[in-house]
Length: 344
Image (cartoon, rainbow, N blue to C red; front, side):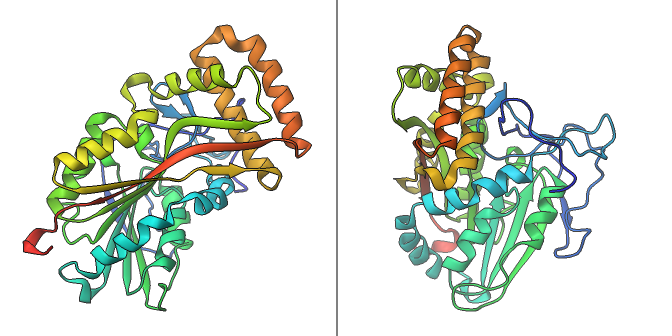
């Protein structure tokens, strides 16, 4: 976007849950998601290589007040959207469709909550895969991203039915069954790995209490395969994974923790791989990801810096030359919570 600055050195992308307020906003108009920018600690949920303990790299709006919290870069979310769409596990869609078709009140259309929606890539991917009228409720900490997400939300479902949208400013830390009353589905993308175990338990309890399924995609799995390989690959990966776990965040343990949490609430859980497969066609994304990946590893283990600087220069040169490929492993989770009201 024109008003955003370039990413910080290292290109890391990221954040922690902020304050627990929720504000409704209507959709489509410029005012969508509008909330006073002075709200303290206004950071968002989402995914990407971590920068510091419990936070993700962000950018500051050039015309923002000096004390305004930085915003999560829409450019990063846009850059990764194609890779995310290609990676998500399509095998989870059929069991989800079956459950949605049998939910009580389906005749009135689906109500879908997208938690930590960012610029709305999950809705743009999922809405066209589902039949029937849909009303999307987008949740995020950042009012600017909520506006982008609302404006870019699809307007029709797979069968041409209408899709509508509203925005709510808030985060997963205060999500309750009451907040999900009437929900048909909860979705999130690239979110679980930047939550704590307590926050994942809160999310699972809210979904179970509301009796709605959850489709949670693109959680980092802690495994990376680079071709050609380098002796430092494993050491960088281990340091990055340790960085992801700082300050109680789950990082690569998130998918296991989420499966356990939903299962403990009686849900049937399915997990499928959803790797990014990056090559010459994704060189811009791969370069930004590499900077974040290596930068977080060095922050975790400063003694790596000299070797990591050399490693990153060589990796970026190979990326620019079209000679580097990467498989960045993620996992998608579908939790089929027991519907309320006695439906099966």
